[in-house]
Amino acid sequence: MFVPVAFTSGIQGRLNKQFAVTIAISVLISAFNALTLSPALSALLLRPRKESKGILARFFWSLQPRLCKGNARYVTLSHGLIRKAVVGMLILGVFAALDAVLGRSLPSSFLPEEDYGYLFPKRPTSSGRFAREDG
Image 1 (tube, rainbow, N blue to C red):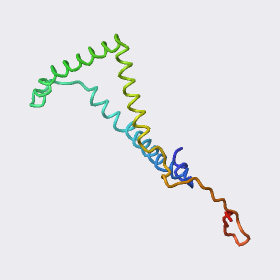
Image 2 (image 1 turned 90 degrees about the horizontal axis):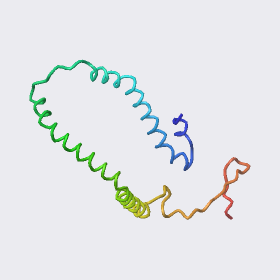
Image 3 (image 1 turned 90 degrees about the vertical axis):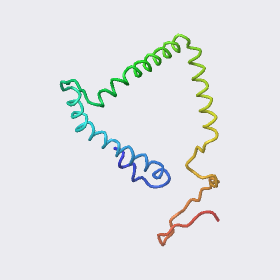
Image 4 (image 1 turned 135 degrees about the vertical axis):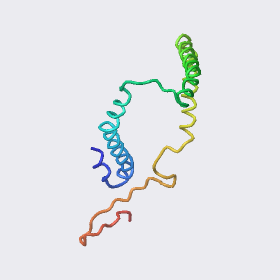
């Protein structure tokens, strides 16, 4: 579906070419992942487990209390922001204002600053060449 867009000519084609190729490649990678890697990973995750006793197992067991503590902090913060919606809305407003400031300061166009928007129409001549109609 996106591959024909990559062959469009003109400025519109140049704008869409990278997008079309990126989407087409990501769809292929996603299809490969869905058909091969995901079932294999599911089989590994769903198999019966036996207790690990190596050095990595001890490391992860020592890491577990800190992860649980971080999770508890996140849940507490989330509950606080839900109870005090004004604080959450203020944080959202700060990020929206930052987005607006950055949106105005960053370039927003594919066309360079030197483009004055002139249009030069062409018409075919009897010899098959094109002549500009600017004078």
